[in-house]
Image 1 (tube, rainbow, N blue to C red):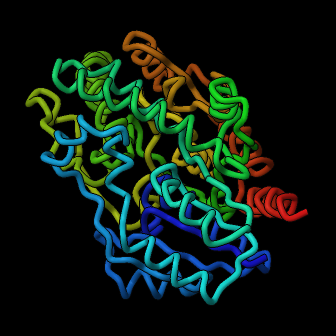
Image 2: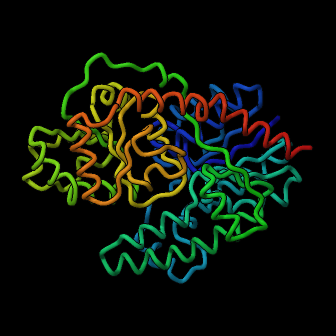
Image 3: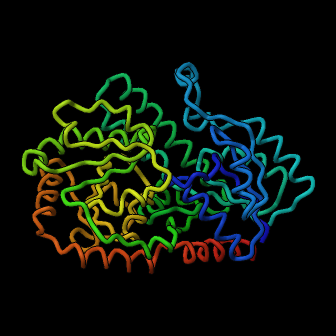
Length: 397
């Protein structure tokens, strides 16, 4: 197949779930012998770096489009029917590219990553009869809804509630227009089908690299906790802030020698209370997270806002790490508490599970072995790309 893949960002470096998801689909479909024409927004990425990396498995076109937040435009968006997080991705550059592209190309399938890029379907319908598929990496309105519910600032709460309602209406309406919407979890598929039964959906989960299954660490640092997350993504910021305020102070009281390591962009800008600083190491962004993470004893995912699948959980499971997550954090991944990972909701339960973990109350060896087997059978890219291939071939029948 010849596939035109339309992405809101360059999928490099592979340091967050969005990029990993986009990259995996493109690379592993290419590995299966399909031709990938890949168009994306440059945003802040170096053009030459991005072009060289994408050229390894696709024919790339990188548009010089930025999508950063603008307070004035965000305020003016109150008078628009289009959600602000969507409107940022509208671009003349992409429309011009598509009109020029279809003069000389006839792809079999158009694959669009993320709802944010779905606006171009009206243009595509003018230019081609090829099936058009939307990859919903998250059910976007659910993220905004949960953020609105958790917000304390009344102005932010009101604004995010308005955006949530716009986004829900927009998402439900737009998804119906595609020949197929591939969802990352059965939960998301069920919700979308319930809201709009006309939408044609299929669940294909996110994938991880099989190389993670081979990672090993000979020595674990005792009493260490790791958190990974880019603080520019509001669910990460919300979850970590909640953990630092409601959970970690009590953990320190019970385990004074505990150390929390914070990885990811923006962590260095967090306002950490003085009394916590002795037990926290802010590492920030690192190029290879596995050089840092393998020797940490427990990985936490304290998300209270989100949708879809947390690829970082799947990666940590593949690498054999012990994980403590909220139910929302592990949403979309069919694992059970104290079987593959630990699950806790609310400060008291999170604190209790943490203390019991470091007291050796859980058989972590068996849990991590089950985690590896679970990922190996269900979530490596070699398996996931085959599901995309079958879904797209079925559209061509």
